[in-house]
Amino acid sequence: MNSEGQSQVRLHDFKPGNDRFLAEVMSGLRKAQKELPSKYFYDEHGSYLYERICTLDEYYIPRIEDSIMKAYIKEMAELVGPKALLIEYGSGDCKKVRILLDHLQDPVAYVPIDISGEQLLRVTQDLYSSYPTLEVLPVCADYTSSFKLPEPKRRGERIVVYFPGSTISNFDPIPAKHFLEHIAEVCESGGALLIGVDLKKDPAVLHRAYNDSQGVTSAFNLNLLHRINRELGCDFQVDSFKHYAFYNPREGRIEMHLLSLREQSVHLDNATINFAKGESIWTESSYKFNLDEFHEIAAAAGFKVERVWTDEQQWFSVQYLVAT
Ligand code: AVJ
Image 1 (cartoon, rainbow, N blue to C red):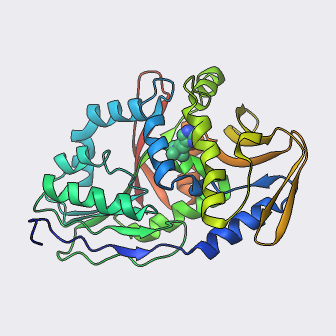
Image 2 (image 1 turned 180 degrees about the horizontal axis):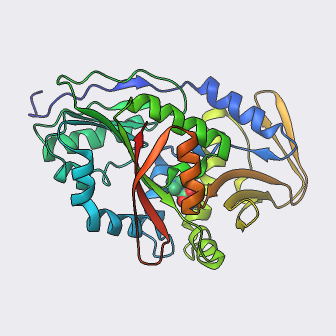
């Protein structure tokens, strides 16, 4: 405890440097179909915009996931069992996990993992105020790369990974399988994964969710260019690009792009990158699954689907997968 009576939070820091950011931006912009990794959306302002997206009526995911969590939390807590070590990938504002923390029986520790270090410190403080006896071990990392998990003081009965919000949707099928394999290793046998998985639905609903009427998703997409300008010294004319999102039914995914409204060039680390008028940068994929499709991916990664909860319309699912 410090003089303000707040506990000193120790951040386990594996935050990647700007060199990795630059390398990934450069290689993405050199491809025939230009692309940028969606994980870079979440700087301070991007995280704020994402939180605003999550309050929009059109963006159904958080609302429905939350209703599923509330309806079935007792069953979920029972499956997780006592003395679990709870790890969350992409913990963000750490609000979703609270319902679990409120219902789990004596979890040994909670390990939030997020790329945004500032936010992680803030929310860890809040968690300590709400759950004074819970050991919180925050990890700042790009969870798609390897890092060492901190050791909790008490030994847990099992490791349970929480991966809500259908963040798995951002991975292409092969990386998705690899990522789930990695989680299966982290959980060890007997551990489990509680995951939010978005489902296929009327494309009109999907279209509205990624083209909201207030333009928050557009601002979220364009913020990536502002971030690249600021952190990598690039010179994107952000108002010469336009948010473009559509459902690709063949691939079963929403694609977000940034369209160049005119012929233009940008400069990045001594390179010049040219854009034709109408050319796009592909910034995000958000896959929508059938329950069978996801079942197959989970099985291929070493998970048995133990329980699936959905809403009445089957727009979203929360699934409990056990590592085999
Ligand atoms: C955080 C990956 C679940 O794909 O729906 C929201 C991110 N992108 N609006 C999604 C996002 C545009 C979101 N996930």
